[in-house]
Image 1: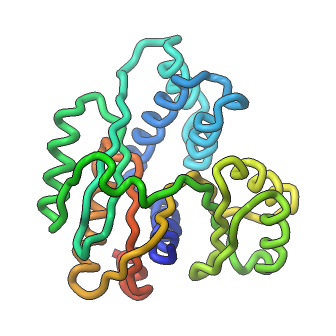
Image 2 (image 1 turned 90 degrees about the vertical axis):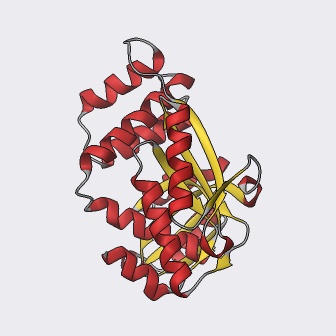
Length: 249
């Protein structure tokens, strides 16, 4: 899991200084709208609660958040988005799972397929790689703020699964059912969190080095830059120096 979680941390840090704030807001609005279909009360809708938290962290205006939620509940008219998962393989045989929200399935499918082909990968059939991933909570905590033993104590008591060192952060994984509980326990213990999200964690990883590693990172970046793509997950393990170089690129 090391490569996957390190990349998640790098993506978070890059998002903080992402110049394409407009695109980021657009993706957050789509997620808010789709999440609100399951109900407009965040206390009763965990997906909406998480989407609203991420929108606030991105400094999205309160009225923008409320409008997106109302579009999702049908209180005001708006574009309808469909959830589209894509599965495929990247350079080195790495499994890639893509989650998209689109108002045009045919366009998005064609464009995602082209991204795979143009970056030395291929789109595969439904079920080809999804079985490799499990939905889990994933929380990053700055290592300088607290000891690993203290984090482990709080996390395990709240039902979390594991704490691992990932560069300058402590990476906490939790079962999906314990995600909110672990976040609350960390907050009550006054342990700062860099990020907290529900993600797809691979059951195993594929080591990729050299030119194929560079090609793979370029594919992942291209997929994540697509307007309709919300999340990209992959089961790779790439050398630390290549990940850090990608973070600076």
